[in-house]
Amino acid sequence: MNIYNQADSNIRKTWVYLTFFLILIIGLGWVFSYYFNSPVVLLVAVLFSSFMSFTSYWYSDKIVLAMSAAKEIKHEENLQLYHLVENLCITAGLPTPKIYLINDPAPNAFATGRDPQHAVLAVTSGLLQKLEKIELEGVLAHELSHIGNRDMLLQTILVVLVGFVSLLADWFLRFSFFGRGRDREGGSIGAVLVLLGLVLAILAPLSANLMQLAISRKREFLADASGALLTRYPEGLARALEKISQDPNQLRMANRATAHLFIANPFKSKKLSTLFMTHPPVEQRVKALRGMDVK
Image (cartoon, rainbow, N blue to C red):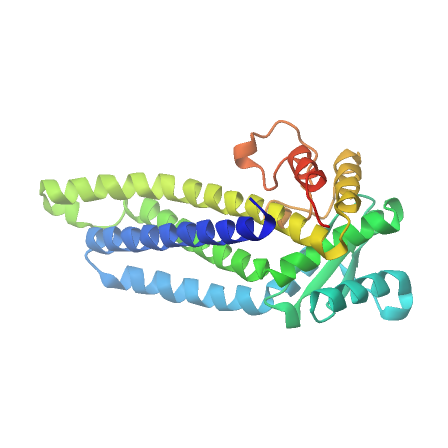
């Protein structure tokens, strides 16, 4: 399967996952509204999630940059970095994003923003210090591929959907023990629905987060391949990923909410199951890159 077929396959699977999310949310909403015998609960949840969705869409880049303590780099402050980004953007047909620096010895990078016209590229000081030019170019191409592939918008949608599912589940678990629902009026149907709602409320956030992680991992493979096609030199990104993964420093500014944005897992723990990893194993990514034919 070539890279273009793989991209189509990943996009189709992504929409399947999103459809599953929507069905799950609708199902949870119906169960909750039936249990509480009041559409007001669902209406409040929808309004609150809509407000959070609006905020996260328009201000997600500023929130992430603030959480990462990133500072904007002016053109004259790092000419080499800007020229690398500008040349890659010309090749990719993308507007040049703003570039930010995270003062941290751990080599890493991420891209954020709601669309290519409002994109931001952030790199750590460790990345600039420890990578060779050809390796840095591979990392930058990977992040620009996220921008070109519209992965950032997809991740925003996923965050909203996962947050909405978790919100409904949390509300149901809290109010089911204190509110007055239909099950208290008697009837086997009400009891079954309440039991179903409790099961969904417990499992939905877990399944939603696992789905989000699965999509994030697929997007990393796609961005690796797209970035390699952009530079025409997969070995540069392969070497960069090896250096980043072998670096002993853990990124101080990273947290669980932003970990999936970085090019490589910012946490150095080796104990997590691959099921809960935000990124594919580096060995698999390097193998895929070195098996590419970009001629």
